[in-house]
Amino acid sequence: MLFGAEFSLMFLSLSVLSIGFLGFGFMFIVGPNQFGRWDWEAPLFMLVGNLLISLPWGLYMHFLGNKAVKEMPPVRLNRQRREVAMPRWTEGKEFSLPFWNVNAGLIAYIVIAFSIAAIFAPFNLKGESPEYVQKLVTIFVTVLIIEVVVVGTYLFFALRLKKKHDPKLVYEIYPWEKLVAYIETKQNIGPSLMATHTVLTLAIPKPDDPESALAAASINVGHETAGLAQWECIRQFMESGPEACPDPKEDETLAHYKAKCRRARKEMSLLPWLGKKVGDWFFQRYLAHIITERRIKTLALKSLPEELKTWSEPLPKEQWAKPSEALQSLNQQLTRAYDRGLKFAQMGPVSEWQAGREEKKQQKRGRGRFRA
Image (cartoon, rainbow, N blue to C red):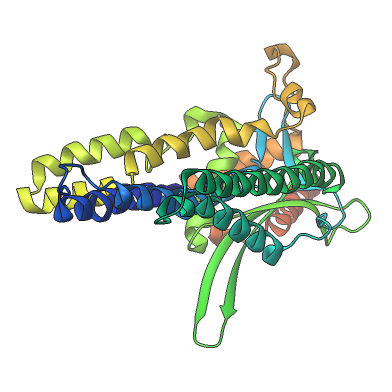
């Protein structure tokens, strides 16, 4: 998300550089005319060009990042209810706008951009009367208004239809003790590249088909050991509380970025530090961190259903759900195994582990009755 924010803000820096260096630079190179007046044509040309090219692309990348955040709603773990809220989208394919696709959008953008540029073209005509120039400007402005009204009206109704018919975000509430979690290593093979990545997946099985997931969420963990550590952190949070988990990292936060800049000023020499500051300005990293934190703290939560907000409300302690006896027994065994120096990966499947424990108990009870 941070990279996406930096990439969209890069167009802002490109606009400032092009207007400043190319627009005003060319104006100062040419200098004033014989009447002492500066030619503002180059700066205005660069300004209009950036409004037609850089601004739309920057906004497109910005809203694309917002869309990605809204389409990746968070998984919620409720310790007090001992439940998990897993997001999923209702079945159905995405609604396609009639008469609209990538080519249609590009054509509409080009037509409107040329109409805006055409408004300024009559002012460059030499030897024409002011009335004729004004007439051309009026015609081009009228055409632009008609185009904007037509495209705007279509998009207004089309987007409302899309919002109505698109798959809806719903949350499945599921007991924590029945949640399925697994780590999987995948290999993606392409024409010239083979990539390996490992994911930790939390899944709610379908009631009529336990081998399939009703809702699932995955996160890249890099390695199986890191995935086990991530799962153990989730498990400890649900069983023992947040105090049993490591503190959240501040990587990629605004506070971390400020601290990193202060540390760089102390540790780096002047020229490398100036190069870093130029890169920070070009990608607008300070503003990118602010946008990213806003997306995480506010935008990601706006699409949550109201029933999930009610489900997330805290409960009085006497109403907290209690873990089952079977789970408490397994947790105690796991704690004793950790105390003996064993690792989770060395213990084998929990189902076999539990079965072996019950068998040993029966054997001990049998030997006691025989002695008696």
